[in-house]
Length: 97
Image (tube, rainbow, N blue to C red; front, side):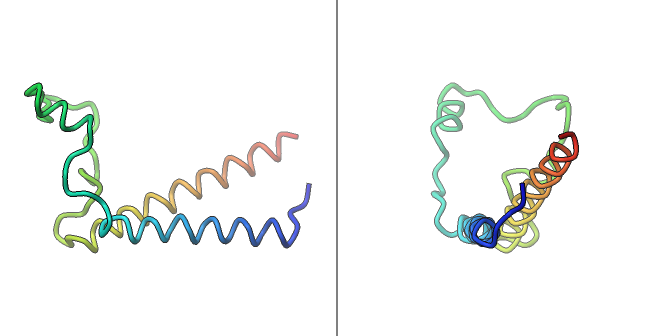
């Protein structure tokens, strides 16, 4: 199955929208914690884990030294990695046929 020009345009528009959300989300996101985090705070369940299995490379979706730019960069990087993995899986599944 070949992609038509219309399909390629739709994919490009989807990627641009995804990356647009990644860039804008630090500026439109609420500073208040979400429901799960608020409930954990109310129940006095902290985020402090004595020995986490895996440390997050970017806790709280940010790179602290760069403030808002760090948030944009981390979200942009995450979107690119996710899109790349999805594209790679698509290629692998296509080859299996």
